[in-house]
Length: 426
Image 1 (cartoon, rainbow, N blue to C red):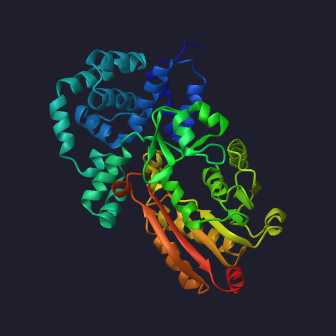
Image 2 (image 1 turned 90 degrees about the vertical axis):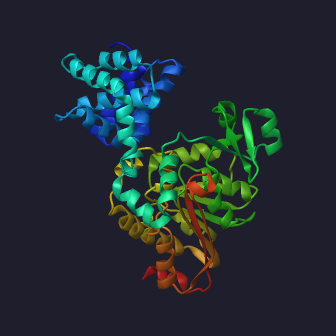
Image 3 (image 1 turned 60 degrees about the vertical axis):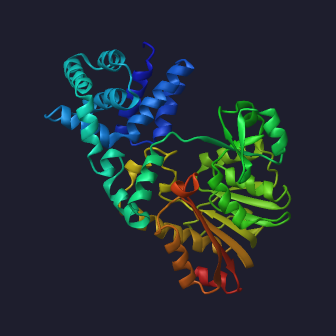
């Protein structure tokens, strides 16, 4: 089989994503692993694939304006790819049209050619038409999601949030102080820039392969530090990281504890738990013990029972990920309005389960990377209402349009009475 070009790779990824319903990063990563594209062509394939996913609604709006008749799915993928190049990448006309036509099946080439050439002729009209559309079309987000954000954050902040989600995410790394000091890291890796408000984190111009391989840093957004710092684990304590994979927060907890004490790091997925083991090992977090655990089931393994009760619990709960859409680009297209209440019920089940192994006087940090009140403040309110032994000590969040980092939420709850574990069993 002939080597795929960057455009062919992006087109194949779009079709697999649509048909197989797999996560976008998984689709494109597997395809790129099978190619021998040059670094520049790999980057172009990623730009095309992710760019189309970021702009689906807008690209389909332009398709509808340029072709009145129904467009079947495979043809739609090719037109999305071509229109993204014409209108958003502003690729030179010859390349955008000719190269996109070339990857279309023979019988579809006249249609693709006609639509893309019409797009180049009507560029100003098409762009003006797009600018007149509602926000959910202009910025390609589900309409229900835009409307709920407008209700929660207001029109101006919602537009900023949608713009944020459509920009390529900068790369941040957490300096692993178990192995290297921030000062030494900046000297050794000059393509990094320190963050004044987050001394443990740097912005990275290029992927620091050497630093990652030796465990000097871990790719991580600064917003992830909120929950760890709120838990404030001390050297010598027993800490449970209840939903820990892939292990970035786990290793940061070990750093805050100066690698003294015990961390039990759990995940229900066997493959993700193996990734966690590899990450914490490379980062030198020697106090971490990885345990497979599904908190929606009643069973507690001996590895947890033998350590419990815990001084502190970090519960980075499964959530809808609306705070990290910029990084998880296809999340927006997977969400449904009912997901927020469904996830909040699951979050409550998991929280009640982990509270059973928290010691009297211990603290729980409940966190998500969601922006939605159902998954954040409402979960905390419901816990406080049903468990009087819990008290809310602190609550923090990160909003992209306010803080300039990914969205995150964390609440610190403290157990004040011995009756808590009994209450959580009922």
